[in-house]
Length: 430
Image (cartoon, rainbow, N blue to C red):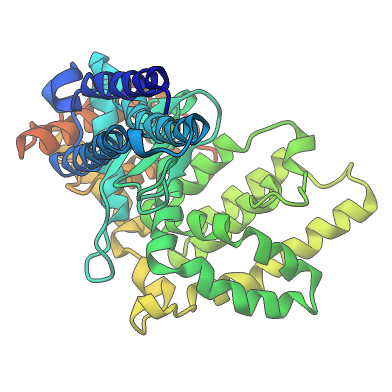
């Protein structure tokens, strides 16, 4: 081969190696207060994955240089270099994927809150005895919805994602409503770890052959399961948060997309409330459903569209028991309801926790983040907590969870000064 071609391509390959050497571990390149950092487990998993990718890239580049002279033609050498360069960019793309999530941690307030959300997500994901939960990393982004890149899925350029990466909407910060969006995304990871969607689809598909309503349930099942997990972990906080996310112009609330995996917002809120009523019985769920129907009445829709939504609404009573009684193989013989339900989230228990929390006014926050969010959301719905107080509590709790994660302990959470209560949006439950 022409020596000038060999020299050129060798220099190009060595240039890749030089740039690769400047990619430093996050532990050496990110500036943040310790409380804003990832959990040690998440950081180790990410650093290990990226270091392995860089090492493989170096090996491939060295092999290319060593065998460059044996290439049959300059065109063949260039083809091999082009593939090498694509792999190089894939390694950088994976680095940038995590760098985008970590760069926000340098912000004094939001960085610490992101670490607190990591702890909340990890708590919502925990299910001892059923699977080993992967680490979770959260970051903020624009938009009204959250999203997840699940752990153990393929990354751009190859390899398994070492941690679940959850994008949370900036417009939800900071209040208990952020928990609803976050835990819904956690629900997608839970569903993947337990194989829930795969085990639910066949019976749904069988019913869908004879009933058009079940065709919708089958198409929407991945989002329905994620909503179920959110309700199971947060109680009414999940559905109230869902109302906040889905409060859109009517045209969007009543839109049924042909290939959209999300249920139409109108039916999605009612389905969430029905799941909550089945898991944690109480009048608040029906009151919240009526509120939603008052905000978005069916009158004014075309008759065919109105009839379709009424059929879907009637189908909820058949769907919810089948979901909760489902026994996926990974549930070890238990029903989904038995695995997901949390006795601490019944309304009476949440009221008692809030009363005790207020009386103690220090270090009385529930130790589990999901329980704390459930308490705040229930108090807000009952009119015992203003939006301003809720935001202040949530900011303090996120900071506490971040400290606990970074220091192995937690400072007491002081109650913000009380302000006057306001009219609840539905009658408090007993």
